[in-house]
Image (cartoon, rainbow over all chains, first blue to last red; front, side, top):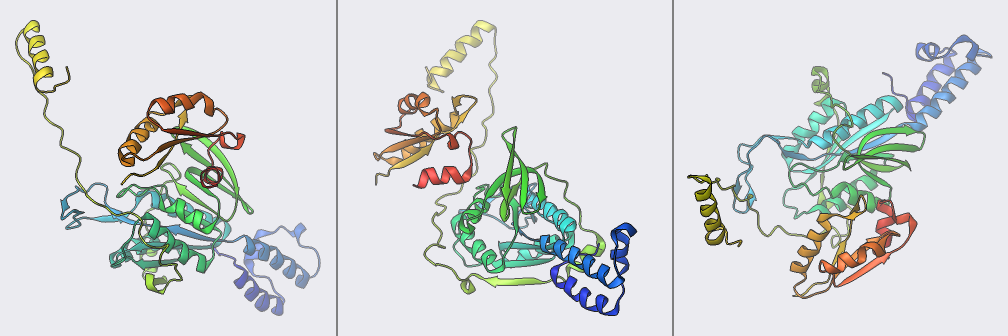
Length: 312
Length: 82
């Protein structure tokens, strides 16, 4: 599909109008009745029409996190989750966000930028996103940066603010830490509306209508753009990267950003929480089966409730 | 060190949610003698204030405004921060 942006419309205008012919693309999209006037006038009116379309093109930002594969077993060493030999993936909810972004971009034109705060290794997940169809990536180096959800939000918001956007999409929660705070905080910092856990998104001009999952109920919310939405399972079915997509992804622009380069209020961007301790849930104890006839079992049970469970 | 803790009460199907009571209890532990305030946003607040106090809130604040009957991030943020 040919993506029309304001920039390439004006370029086409220059080339094609000057030469007095219409590109096949425009001819194919309009019936004869819609083409009054001279060839030149027609060309101008079509280009103007497409220029309008160009203006509705969407600059979409996707917040993406590299997370543990949900299938991996969690081991804790030195009060941290051990990453040794673990497979990493794009946070599954972020994948829904990415898929939605690509679909909207394909419909309206524009650009999908994937932004991730993570270690250098997260380039792999960004490249996967580019292979799925995102246009460019930004990786903010997380190494050596003391960060929690508050800090990460400030960092992401600073990067987004510098670049402009019409729409921000993210996952409703990450499957590793499960805090579900970052996207919400980013929307607050950028002072734009936010709609969480969406299962449907429709864009009409500068308005968006989203359906959100509220613990089984559905809420329909209308908002103006720019706005931020977070994806819930059911929003769509993320595509797999195609082979040509994978090849193209290698050449797509990926920008590396260091936190020190950002225009940040360091005091605000400091982590406000600290993980004091990390432990696995207590192992479930094996049950005990009492033997004997019913009367005997009841007797044993009462005894155990008194002496072991100490509940009576 | 004692801390003052705010608990945001939630209602589902006309009843305070279990998790609100759990949050009050957790707030009690965290507060270490500080004050636990439960906030209820919405016109029905009076109905729930007694329960919130019974379950351990030292103070209950009810913000009555129709715009708060339905949760929206913007309205709730304004109500909580102003």
